[in-house]
Image (cartoon, rainbow, N blue to C red; front, side, top):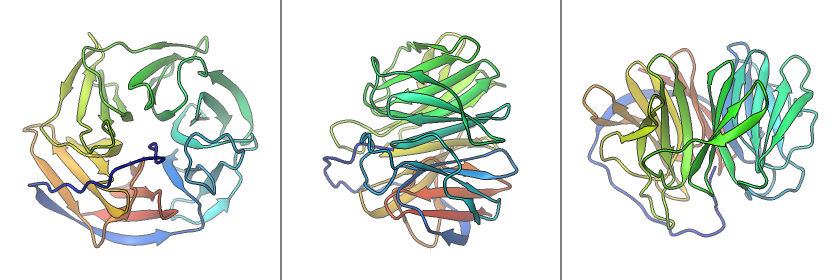
Length: 288
């Protein structure tokens, strides 16, 4: 999720190859959905509330619980009062959510809060999250161009210091097998100059993937490719792009129509599940 208070509408063109996908369904009933996550039994949806203000402490944020087909089962799954929940991550029966300046841990069985970690002295725009292992959770702070590493054992955190700043640090995806943290950025100065890359967690060096740039939001690793959601502009022009890790070639997933603000998405059973943040919809798109 991004700062939408001021912006310049900038449209980009990309020389890319197209990959085919087919929309299976689009569901509504939300306000401004920013993130989805799954435990392979249900889908959980973060909705920042009625106003498209990602930093407002207005108490109207929600977490929805859906079945795997997209049917809403519970529109107020989390009992804790939330403001503008964004990134979600699930591990060991716990749903972690980023809510402006805190990370909240929710028991999946009950929807009740287990604990929270306060970031108010270091960030006011916590965004995406990624689980590396049972003890490690990463969270991006878009307002600070930073990533924080949370120790889940003692509930402390520290900044992940790297050799490169990712402007508008946003989407995160942790790959334990390669010890990499994939990351993208929304860019700086209201320009679509965000990049995508990965951090080698052995030495915290950052490597950019290809030359593709944009208003990047979500990120996901699947079958040797990094998938990126790119807003393109602050209207219904959003796309999904891929970077092939073998050769850094860039492709665009061909869809029937653009998405208004494609945010933190997942891939489940060869299907993209993408929040349309500006339209309050979730798009289920089968990859071909």
